[in-house]
Length: 391
Ligand code: FAD
Image 1: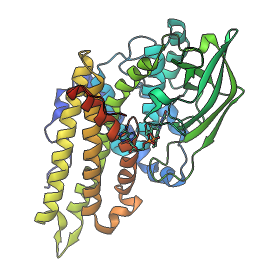
Image 2 (image 1 turned 90 degrees about the horizontal axis):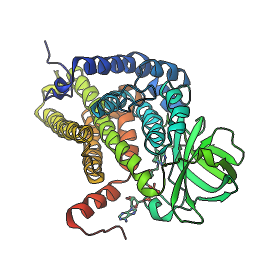
Image 3 (image 1 turned 180 degrees about the horizontal axis):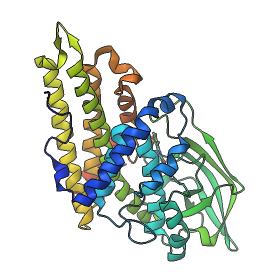
């Protein structure tokens, strides 16, 4: 009898309550039964499996840590566990979900008025309406806080939006896209709920990505796009409010990195026990065991870190730099884990059907989105030294 294949070596999931564990298992079973069999095919075709949206909705996991508006109101640790379980099988699905439940619903939850929350969150929680989040632009990525080119201008009771956004996940089919724009008068960043089909709002799918191919990322063009004042996020008054959303979702991205690393490690371990060379399973070779143990060490360090991150979040103590440190560490470590997972599989490591190659590619997107390694490093660097090294 060979030992079990499980990336939770320190049994951190024993910290969960029975109810939380049951949710984790529900998500795990869904991902294994419904998503794993189709994940490579959709990734290859660069299409999104729209048919899984009602099944995901039935899991009742959207806005899992938000209070009210039909949301489950569970601890933030569950948001992390869900991100991990989704990414452990398919990082694209985890990203789709993170954009909808974290970035889009989170913007409304943290920056919307009571009426806006009532209007959008219950239907988004049930995934009857899908959200996107438009912050990054073609000319401005890391420097978006100070350099945003998309503008908004108030005319009567309407805002006029002009500009472009790039990389916006879900935007090609989303019912609502949160658009961040700089007010021409006050120079402050404001947020808008832009409904699907609004005149002057167009999307163009970004083709030929080598990572997260299942996620539909778009370039959005806003041309004299008119948005009613009632659809401006009423409590988003400057980029500080946008940053509150990012602090929350960056913690989720660190958990996604854990899921990505865990998926690659577990698939690679399984493979090494089956694959034989020189008449023995390759798992019995010392050099292969060295790779596996290094992967597991990284994975265990990452998972321990994100558990603490979520505890801080649940205690209301999470800072930007806490979230950034986890994002930096976990996105550096996944590169190491997925590349060793690929390595122990030899040539098969680069074939999609062996279920490691997709993690290798997708890790590259986690590495760059929601703040690159450099930007999150500078956020922590500023906090510990008192000096800002951004410019
Ligand atoms: P740039 O800002 O051009 O950076 C290029 C390089 O320069 C990086 O290595 C960066 O770290 C480095 N750099 C920049 N400034 C400094 C500095 N001061 N010091 C040192 N190094 C520096 N955005 C959204 O708004 N919504 C989405 O849904 C979304 N989804 C995404 C999905 C994917 C797959 C990807 C790849 C991106 C997505 N993004 C999204 C955008 C993402 O957040 C940006 O790609 C990211 O913030 C980096 O911006 P950039 O790509 O323009 O790189």
